Image (cartoon, chains in turn blue, purple):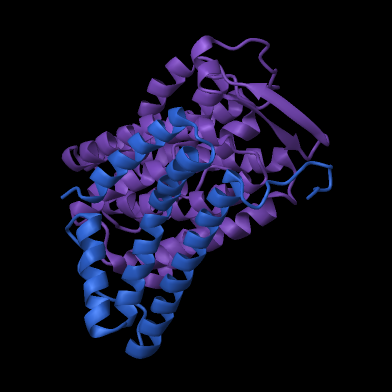
Length: 130
Length: 277
């Protein structure tokens, strides 16, 4: 693939393509969930403002709680919004996790696999912060 | 104080738009605007940090695909910024709001001074690289669309740049901003990176840095879904529009406008810091 100044674009299986795809997909999915939930709530309640209590838990517990509720009770606008927030929060985490796997299994670069593993470990710890 | 979702959406749209035009993200405009409309500064910081994840991830995805971002550099530096953000966010919870206003004002005015000081500086490639930076494979090249050339570069002083990035992460976690100006300063002055690489790599790092800080704010009940939705949607839409308008405007006009805005916001926030409100 050549751009207008004759520079090769990243190959389909490259790390640049992987990271770029994860980030754009995460942001687009989150934006779609948040905007759908926002409009759905507005139409259903006749008012765009809502009082949903601020979660006071770790990100991991927030995710578990929402996934469990969605599974048992189905979706409603507020749950769709919470799902959008979860997807947004997990986007950089998934990027780091898959980068680590790419460095380890595809590039076989132990140096950077270790560094991304460290980032991943601290981020995992932060997901469980209470 | 609960703000009307339309006001939140409008404020965030403007903040995202103006922030993207200045190349600094929306937080630097959003937090002063939200607090001006009565939101508590700690809630404004927490909301801004969540929106930073969205705007930085969105723009980083394009820069990574354009091969402007140095992935290895980003992954080395985010080890430090992430730890800094965790410490910064914990610090925010324990210090009084007046001090946060004061620090935000100082960062805004510092960014303005930096923008002014570096208005005519040209980047010069480094001819040598220290052993640690070479071991980290911190070099690369990127396509410069303005000149149609491939620009090759090498980063240096990674052993100093890394720990300094802890401070940049701390500013981000503490004040809920991307702290791009601080990161770019370290990339440029300490590590000798070209401005485009430093800006785009800073964008990649910000997502992980903001997530680390957000975890502290969420655990302390500072992120309410109600106001978070219009803020995230507004900042993302505003930033999307801002980046498209930016490419059509002359650099000098954008720089002057953003400089004036940083000065006004910085002085206003600093005054509130002195008043302790």
